[in-house]
Image (cartoon, rainbow, N blue to C red; front, side, top):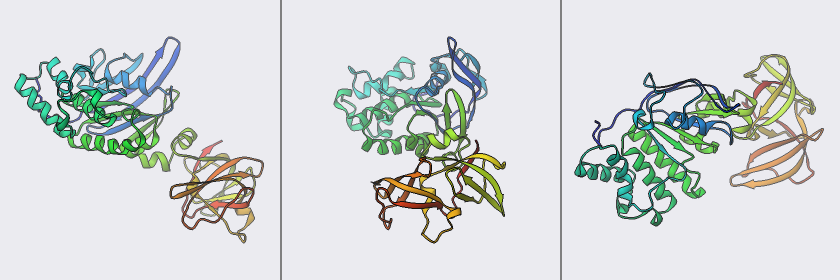
Length: 366
């Protein structure tokens, strides 16, 4: 039996060709993940992509239709959550309203027989101190803010020393101004306790800012599993390029040009590319240009090496200026510029676009 104050290192978690069906409907298909001990991984994707189903499978709340889940190399098929060393925090926190904060945190320890009354009380005190909620031990959930309830839910889950922490949209119920504080707090706790953590979210900012790696899911399939910077800078598929951040997908024809490439856009004009990845095969392609990868060309720029566009809408967004532009033929693209020093843009103004020096948009087979 593990003492309530004993800390164990995070577990290695592996999903091997995991799939799941609800009747004839396949919601998860052939998902492979290998998650290192102590790693923070986010499952990111739109509603219905299978991320919550995967979380329930990991928790032991649902038995997968195909494939295998291993924790530290052991097949955990059929094991309930308590025997997997897994703890889960739900979006609605699921605190007991008739129990104080201290009683909520103690509940899991008592239910599992983790120590006597004195040792449990000491463990609860330590955990409340860890989540900075010691002063609220005697309060009830209804007397707490959303962020405070989130901390209590985390403390209750962590008190039983899980080796894997599962977070189901943990910040979804919080106001936007509280989310950053809780992102920092959750990451602090995760690193301090060295606990393997899997978070389900549809919020790309949360996933990119909090995670060591991100698994992007679409229609039950794994599109890309990589570090946040790689997900954003080197998307593996058009879906990842457009779901994570914003990307303008431009139909073009790719060709070699000296040491690099040229993408002749269907809308007219060409883009000079220093590299072409993940597709470098000449022929029809889609070029995924982030709004910040554009710059405005001056009137003396070579018209054949730029794209003609017309300003449709200009919006100041904090330190940035975002413009919606229409290319020849009507296709819409977005441009983002630093607001400080940005040129004056107005509806109907003709402009010319080119890539910023060093910009390397992703290129996909059309």
